[in-house]
Length: 371
Image (tube, rainbow, N blue to C red; front, side):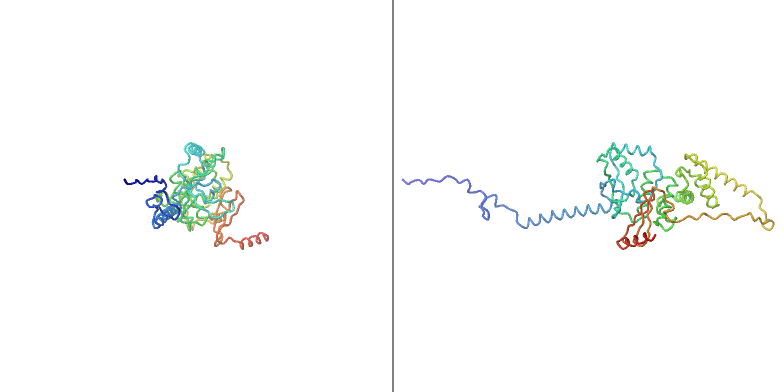
């Protein structure tokens, strides 16, 4: 009878992962992705990352990405604002809304270069929201109100920045004709536009021709009375247009109005309106009497040495520093590559531009020593 052969027990590690640099047939450790597949996977990942980065950079460049910016980094005086007054009741309602629901609509800013005061962005539109957020943060230093949501836009030069501000306020707030005219005057004085007509056409391109004409009439009031009016936004349309016609017809009448305003106490808007209305009524009455009086032929009139020609229009300086208020900021092109900013209320002058370098610094120091 044949002898049976004894079989050894099964080895549990026979099919396990082979040692390094070796393979075990059929073992799961022997299965790995081919090198070409790994290269393709890494290339696809890198390509997707680059595409995402490009999309984000394009969105940021087009002003489509909302960013959070510290309140202290925003220069609200970057542009001369078109809003002269702020209704406290409306501001209180806005503060309450932001406290309850947070900021729903971003402001618009433009990136600035290096500035002396550390401001990184200049405000284009959203002054009311920025002011309200600052009030909220000042209440208890809540970190939730330490930053503000903003779109960083790149307007087409200074003209684009002013147009963006005006369009924003035309939609959100009811600006007076005086405020609209004033921003056109200020933009012209800062050298943004070459003429007053071009400023009106550019800033209010979407307004009707009749509305633009009324704003142009109020420009006359701004140029003549801006330094002396206490409540300019309260001027009614009819009164403003009447004064503008009178100033155009009789330039010396503007000086009479200025003198009367300076000599009269005007504690309220109603009081100031009454002064202007009385002056205009007196002027129109005198004009009506003059037009109805019989005309004496020139040959029969005796010459009176006391008669003086009508006074010439008051010559006003075109230097923006002569017209800005203490809390406003003006920016002008002082020279090639040098832009000068001036804020009287803060006693601050800034120089920015490509020509601002160490040489200019030394020249300024030398000039100040000689001054």
